[in-house]
Image (cartoon, rainbow, N blue to C red; front, side):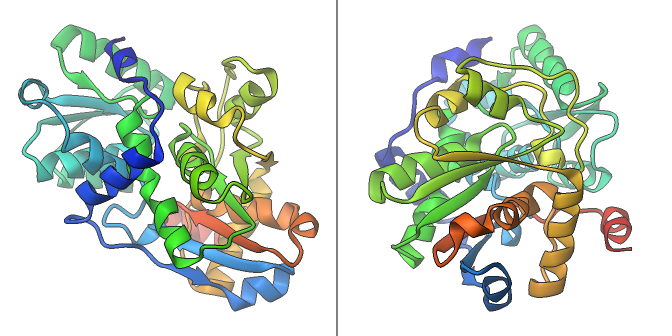
Length: 324
């Protein structure tokens, strides 16, 4: 695929440049201390509320950073991406901002609210395949056939440096963090956390979180090579990828301090806890970091810990089912 030419590891300078690009379009999201969760868990809990973004998730940062940097020739060709939802919403909205045609490939069981949002932002949505990875293969095929600029969900430095701006904001608000927990799907969020934290606060622990039912990146981190799984059946659609990707794995391989897997029940419990203690709706991927924090709370005792709440895009039916 043509995206290999873009595979350069971003630096802190790239993240600073990205923040300057996205600043006219996005407001800084809050990093809020949560007294209720802090007392419950035994450490100081700070929540980065990316559910406040216009797409309801963090990925719009990367979308704006990338789409704004397309060449005139790429803008003319149009872009194509595959998504379980939030990446597609990001590319759809960013493309509408800069007058670029966007095509998003999703699976046949993708979150209907996310599909509707992509279409409302002006993207063409193609529903084909049983899961994200089949949608991704469809997008790659169409890119080759039609000449669209393919936007990979993980192997894109401009996406990574864009989403990394949320971590830069966190250190501005709270310079002394003992640990950051970031969810792992395609791997852009955890990659951004590694790039920023290791540059400005190398003593801050970076802890990756993935679903037990979709552990491809965890397995790849353990083995040191790209791993695949046959399924990725998790309520956290933002984590539901069957394959690890080269660039994020390269970034996190030597930069994370721990990697935690969480169960479906633990993710559901965390979603309920967010509603109960913070009156916040977190989707599965966004709640996964709280689930992991609960699981390892003893090792975090007394520390200042930031949880990336990366998105809040649950359907009403999903939320009702979880809360019952």
